[in-house]
Length: 339
Ligand code: ADP
Ligand code: MG
View 1 (cartoon, rainbow, N blue to C red):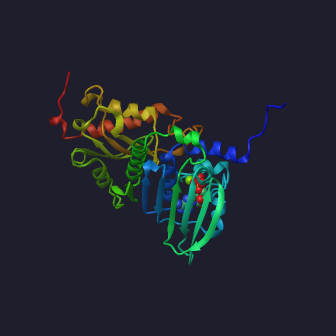
View 2 (cartoon, helix red, strand yellow; view 1 turned 30 degrees about the vertical axis):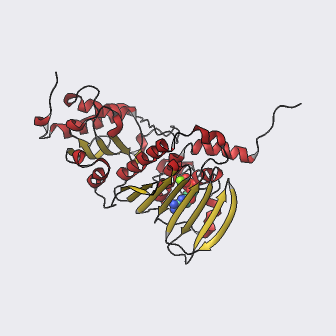
View 3 (cartoon, helix red, strand yellow; view 1 turned 135 degrees about the vertical axis):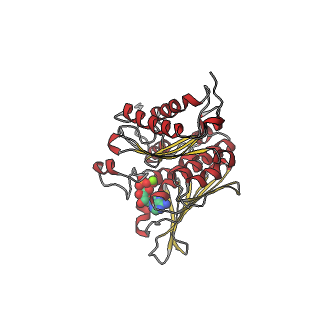
């Protein structure tokens, strides 16, 4: 008897979906990025049961035209690029056109959306990738996604999730990073009906830092504004007194994205080395702008790690920018030097 068979399209879709959305946080990330790409100025994220039972994301962005809705849920359907050449120039956060199709394949999803110039909005329901319903509704401009029972049809994925509390913690961290990278967007995060974060969207990064980290951190910040050879830096770094025993407060965003780079970690830590004890890590919220031509595009898009074509130069630029900001400070007296 033959042993080989081709997987059913449903199974193929579920496997592909699992690579894009591996946990509730990934759903939230994709939907927030879509809201940002849709030029929303306010985004609300609401979850129940760590996002396993419910994720609701509301934005006041462009909305999706009724004629485009079914297309938007097809794999590789995107309004953001036309071809591979566009990839290099892309400034939107998404472009692969996989998120909606993937999320819809592994959840019970409802979307309500309206563009500014439409008289009526549309409600669309899709479950396990099967379209259920599309109808006209009255609703505000923008888009709301309601994702219920994530992984209800892929029990193996569901089992791999952590406790609701842990999953909620991942989502909370994500929303905080989104708020820090976009101070001009008002973010709200509601967990189990409790309001956990509200930022004003007034564009003031220090206000966002205050909402997330509180008074002690906010009153110990050094502003960074510098143009280096290979990048520009802006944002805030903490005085060494507020350094912590782990890297949890090192935030940086490259061209608006939260990304990890071992080179940037090292540049920040080495700049702080003269002022810090060993195994203490600084607070930073740095916005780094780098010409896309220096970014290695061969890195897998799902990985949050980034490489540069000119690592040494990028290291030098960031090290220099932070060292200068630290050196010019009046904070020196309140630092205890350990030899
Ligand atoms: P991508 O973001 O890579 O284009 P997605 O599957 O995430 O792919 O979304 C598909 C398309 O649906 C987007 O290109 C966009 O046109 C539309 N879309 C998705 N979410 C929103 C939203 N919140 N507001 C407006 N349009 C959206
Ligand atoms: Mg997207």
